[in-house]
Image (cartoon, rainbow over all chains, first blue to last red; front, side, top):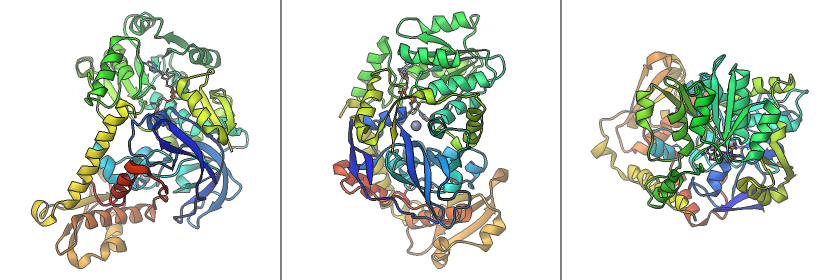
Length: 389
Length: 136
Ligand SMILES: NC(=O)c1ccc[n+]([C@@H]2O[C@H](COP(=O)([O-])OP(=O)(O)OC[C@H]3O[C@@H](n4cnc5c(N)ncnc54)[C@H](O)[C@@H]3O)[C@@H](O)[C@H]2O)c1
Ligand SMILES: [Zn+2]
Ligand SMILES: [Zn+2]
């Protein structure tokens, strides 16, 4: 079958790879219909996550049709239309039972790598390096879905393929940021990053009762999109001081909840950008935590910061003083999709939540390399490239 | 490769080395007295009565202890190598036993790519044993 493979830094190509097989009783094989690029893939492309092998199939946000199920699968049948969570979950370990699905104890086949890096191993994820299990990704005609009963979710009749696609990863991630960030009725919420994840976090904050939601980015086309689809307020950090704008918007207090949806390759107009680039040249930091610093600095006293952006190693100039002296709560997580996807699908069906505007560029898999180029360089007003199989 | 890529590649190599170092440690010297432990999200009775083959087959070469975990987290399944068996084998057996007890089976890795490249080859060597290494 055809699949889009990581072949090296900034090099992805469509290749012929063997069809997936059922390897466990609880596996199923999915015929992929739609699979989208994600900001997390950019960290693979740039080499921030060095646990890749040439020929690895990438992609982790997807939906499709079940074609084959193992004898241990009870909830899905061939022909079913399902969305698959980017994180693979066994559904029965302590973490899964406590709805912390991305921390599943039983789905990372290479636990030693992350145990040494981070002290413990999170769960496995599709197409996201051998540190996270080495599972083949979804930019392919077919994909094996382990623990299918717990990893795939049926799509209700009323939800179209494209809308369902984004519940797999970006919408669930955004919702988690607002939910576990503790957004309450009447809050002011600031979100850094107007990609799919940031937009979904902003919408989730609104639906959880936030009175004002401010979305921060430098790409006007993304800010305008979120303004028109969700009615959020926006700040272009290339034109305005984010701190001043947030103080003005919050009566001098700062946002109650700050959600970071940018990640380890954050950009900045200020001198800290150069600083972080020099640091990484000297191998003194692996990630650029620019938006995290800004979120912590601007959050109100006693407020909460949620880190959705992916980080891989160590950072420098982490504002520990602000965190401690302002009494902040800082949390982060890989997404616990299984906890939110059914609810998100219901909200899409009822018209509460729009997601399909994120698919600005829909193309066949054969154009995968172009899709990543557009997404990476934010060209032609790209929010997400989606591959139709 | 960009600088960040190189920096993290270095981090990757350090991790790889740590995994390898861990494996070389002779159990008798550093870790003889330490239990290797996993917490299984099942009751102590369930664990006692259905100890999976992965662990049961070492029975005569390891000490096993089973006790309730704190805070309703299930059961602490502990093992200590007593014979020739290595810490890595016991670690892997514990992890597999936990997976079988909790999820009914051990998830199999997908097949690796056929042309992994130089760094990929190093990685393949690590992942071939990364199921058994680790910090248990
Ligand atoms: N936690 C999870 O489970 C999870 C899941 C999916 C994605 N992610 C992560 O979320 C992040 C966003 O993903 P995406 O798909 O929306 O990516 P994206 O690349 O489409 O969007 C990121 C946005 O951040 C903006 N940005 C860069 N620097 C900024 C700064 N200093 N201040 C404000 N905005 C800034 C960029 O202009 C861009 O619009 C990535 O790091 C991705 O890895 C995490
Ligand atoms: Zn993602
Ligand atoms: Zn689990």
